[in-house]
Image (cartoon, rainbow, N blue to C red; front, side, top):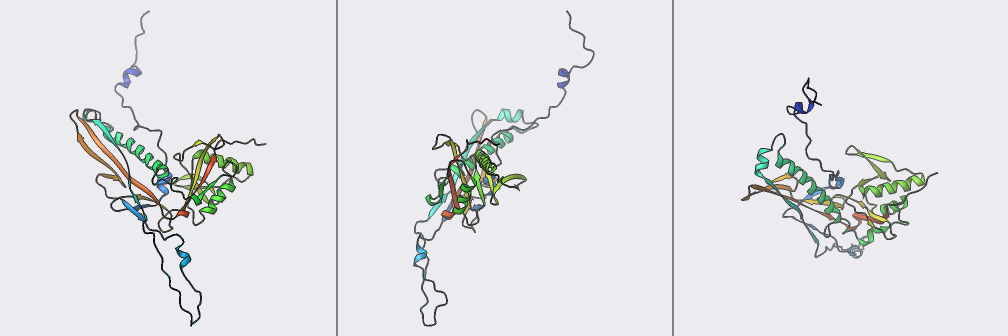
Length: 310
């Protein structure tokens, strides 16, 4: 049986003359990184930030009188500082990118191969930055919560009472909660069970669940692990932010060579004998907690509990 004779131009042949509309490379791991957006960022010099504090208990030795008599001596006072204050050195989130120049020369239209490779890699580096701000063993928020600012859930699931207890710890102008999306969902279930659905607020054009007027910001960088009761659990943070409020601040160094965004640089390292160009990506950052009461954590937050509704 012979093939039928084509009377019109076929689709496959026509496609050879058509231009295909393409997207840049899409990486599913990109998140909004709300923590980076909401933290106030303080510029530092020489990559170092020193937090000077008053010595603990120093206020007890300060004499202050209210309306002393004319014959009374006015108390003498002074404020003593810590002699060895903590210094934060900027951490480096870094990697290198290698691109074969033959590839970047020949296949550069309509999208520049080097630019697109760097764009994805920069997103990966920024995701790691937010993870380090929370989990870094040296300056991460979870690592540096004072023992007096740590509380545990009453029964595992995050209830309105638990978040109220956390607010009672960070009561001086709290800015926002930070929680894993599954922890926010678990809190929502507990609110629904009690008939007190939490209101929402719009920030950056997106809706956020709130409690007592404080937004609950989602991040997948607060890890979920095995809980004390065999289920899956995580933590919920509550922050006060800003230098003027003696809160939590992010640290960066502006004006670094090759800067493409604050404290992020991209520099050409050279071309090797194989004709591959190497680029160095470096992001410098850290975080500092100016006073202990600026950060609290609700621990052992069970995210696996569900209820039957009638």
